Amino acid sequence: MKLCNEAVHKKNDGDDNLIPLINVVFLMLIFFMVAGQIQKSDAIKLQPPSSVSEIPHTDDRATILVDMSGDLYLDNQLVDEDGLKAGLDAAFAKSETPDEFSVLVKVDSTLPVNRLQNVLKLVKSVGLMKVSLATRRGGETS
Amino acid sequence: MQLDQSAQRRRRAISLTPLIDVVFILLLFFMLSSNFMHWRQVNLSSATHAQLELDPKDIRVVRMLDDNGTLNFDGVDLLLSNEEGLRQQIAMDIEAVYAIEVEEGVMTQSMITLLDKLKQLGATHVSLAGVLP
Image (cartoon, rainbow over all chains, first blue to last red):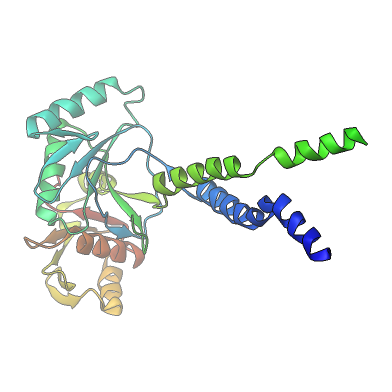
């Protein structure tokens, strides 16, 4: 008779077995919500070079991506060299704080430096002197 | 007594399964969309401005020959791993502009490692040659 009672009790509170699962899932949810950052993903996947630099990104900026074949993306739009110059000009003209406006160049860590230098020369030819190279903290991966 | 029974029935009626469904969906969303990489940046422009103010004789060229860290430090052959040698070279003229040049094919990571190392060892002005005015 006692056994029967226990069986009924278990059947009624079947959801109780799920509580430890919910605890774990909630903990994982809170971890991902607090520790992760949701941000717009780049047009191409890059593994930026690691550096000891601790300078965070500035807000007012144009972002240039350079892929391994040398293709250029300005704010996630594929552009050629002339398009890049025109786009940078337009972004600078639209900027509300021209003194703070900077250009952020994102490249893969394995990109040959001469290709990076070509892009930097292009940016300089537009007249923009505030140029930064995106890096990641040492040891981190995307 | 009847009231108690109905209250018990109401408590049992609430199932946790829909809650778990929602929580799982939220968890999947945050797992897939979260990014844990902390982006940082290296400013390439400040050294260029410093370059303009200084006399050309204060430029010391650091040439990176390959990805293994072989350097020609203003005429002296060094390895990037030789911190003491690099520190001695930088101590000779801390205020100079250290212009980094690289051989064709050297990767960006190697150049950034050299740039970091020079700054860590005391060089105040480090510049990328080839993009100077």
